[in-house]
Image 1 (cartoon, rainbow, N blue to C red):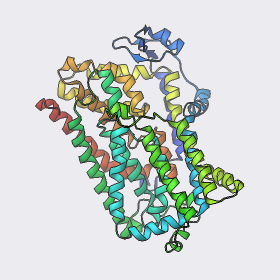
Image 2 (image 1 turned 60 degrees about the vertical axis):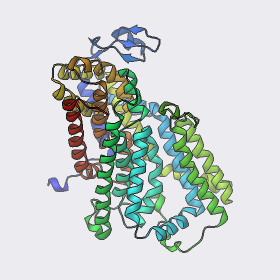
Image 3 (image 1 turned 90 degrees about the horizontal axis):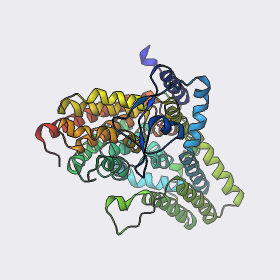
Image 4 (image 1 turned 135 degrees about the vertical axis):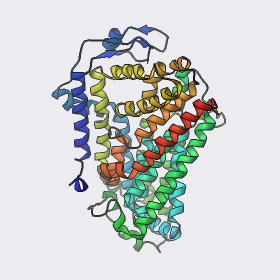
Length: 489
């Protein structure tokens, strides 16, 4: 019976988690820390809650506040509020879908993929390894996460027509980037934010993190390559075998092979160049070079508003270059948006969980309890328990920068208390958070990727379970050795 068990639909899972969060607000005491604003002003807990003050929590300032239980209406309203808060990334996903819809209409992708399949025949495993390292590099350097959504419609046709399944695609993109974020080296949204609150340099402990990144990325690359070969040799061994999977943007995918010997027209070649440059420029525009100590490249600081405009404009340009009538361009763009609509919505639904917890004032309560657990422990036990605590906390707060802002001002001062270096506190935070974010059902990125790849969540969790075990084991070994030897490079 358990073998045939299937989890409910993604949206149903998120509603259940939101309902559970609401139940917790009726059980756990409400509370908050005092908040220190950017100008150094400390706002008392109750006043901070009433005024919605933004800033960092002050250690040892937690106070129990009047309960704010969240009921049925709060659960129903939370996804809407979550969508409002996540509107930037939702629109970004829609614009990416729109661009791909236009490029599909030009026929450039059909011929381009057919040609690529011919050139890469017999070397697909090499492509899997290279792509895994590239996505992991994006994760470790600048926290590549939400941006990966743009690459699924690009790689799915290539990998599936090459004889693999969509699990390979999700493993390369989601798994590769997530392992990179776990083993962040200079990721400003994780290491940068955490180091700032800990009062140490971004480079403290970078040697250890670099070694961890190479080890874990190599492991997942080998794991994905072996699974891909197994599926290629025998499709029945795919974890997705027997599922009726169809991809909206691959309705005409049977034509890829038919176009394998065709040549791109000049217009189609230019369209593919524009299409490819869109993703290259997107990657460049979000990298905070100034925070990485790189001065010779300008930091654009683009985010979802600018990226959405980029893909919208590129969609129009591709339509013009291809000579499409304006009605065909617009219709194709709208059709492409429709193909990714569910993914755009699920991101906002996932944000609803945080909305309920914050409105119910239990986030600070959970954090305060976490401090009481680790504070009396010895150094080795302390850093490893802190690692697992960050795994749990990430289920509720999947944003690494958000979790760092909430926890590091509280946990970092404890380093002196137990006699360890502060970079170990940061490593325990980033590595613990990273493990959970590979499979967190509360993550809009995980659930969005699951929808795009048509991979049921339970299948993804089962597939990544060995990698999770390895990541946990390796992280614990690195943390323990760092404490015992006193060496952190």
